[in-house]
Image (cartoon, rainbow, N blue to C red):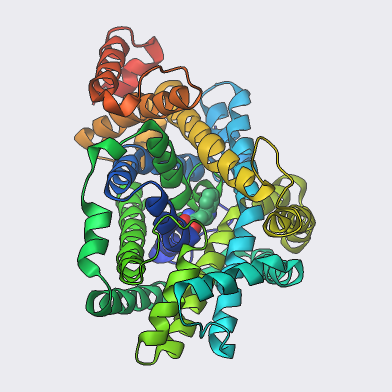
Length: 486
Ligand code: TRP
């Protein structure tokens, strides 16, 4: 069978790296990572998050890029083609469908948070953030959320900008914007870390982030860390797979993945180093929840020389970072409608956008009039986050690992990944044994089917991986023999 010809490719070798980093670096790093680290108590969470990035995020990301490039298309079509090439079961396409749905549902609450960043750029300018204390800034944040008109207006603005850019096509616009945006964000973050160093309780911040308290290593925190690893790398949601389908042949997937993952992790850690010292210096509670950065950072800006300028630039950068991530969440859906049904990109964006507006405006109401509309004890906003990060992305990840590790003929992915024999063996070991076992244990724990806390029992995990690995090597199905030979 001849392979699908690529229709769109990145303009340069850096195209994918820039776009994938743009997708990965976003509110997850600057807003979500600090606030959930605060909620789960610091160092132990950071350690579990880093472990999840290494043991699950990186192998799954490589798999996703390889599937995208091999199948050249939106998640459903790409997985469909790769499976067909193997004579496999077309039902695997559902994994692509679920990923696209996850990306879309994430976008529905993401635009609300991105709206905060946009609004704060503006508020920095018009002086409404010149409040004297963290409490006063908390009141500003609450007042902003209490108004459906304000909150909704900014969310709609973000949604429209996203749709406009995606409608035009990602390659040209996005690739150019990323070139100056990523370095700019890095400079801003370093400046903030510099401020935290000189004016914040830097030592306490560092201790909070990196000192490790074993009693905090709970299954619940591990589940959050796992979900966040998927979220922050934009995995199992169509974004990376679709962007991967635009990579020219011959570019190293492993190297690309490492660059993106390292950049993403550095931004998250820098954000933590910028934020926690300020929080401790001002006697604020690190577990303040989603408003954490909006209550602490404006105070830091006020006390800095050229603070207003820095503040405006910072929130503008966060807004752009959020926008580049938002774009990637809906790219898969638009690419799918465009390829499958020949609907033009602007029209596809418009169609998907109408659904997006309805759901995201409903999610926005969770902060004001709809604060009491709850299902399973969660507002719509929290529910969308919970459903996608805790369930859909880890499930998508496990399925992709199983697809790549057990169901595809080895040569295909070996060719796509182009790793050294040892590198390939390591990747295969990760997607066959380590990633699925870890994700599965975390699921079982969440369902209450593991009576013990999996993290208090590291040897259970190591044992399960070991038994599976040995069993897998002894009873390997025939088709897989070729894959294991290096
Ligand atoms: N990774 C982005 C962040 O950290 C969020 C993001 C972009 C995303 N695209 C995604 C999350 C697709 C899940 C799925 O902010």
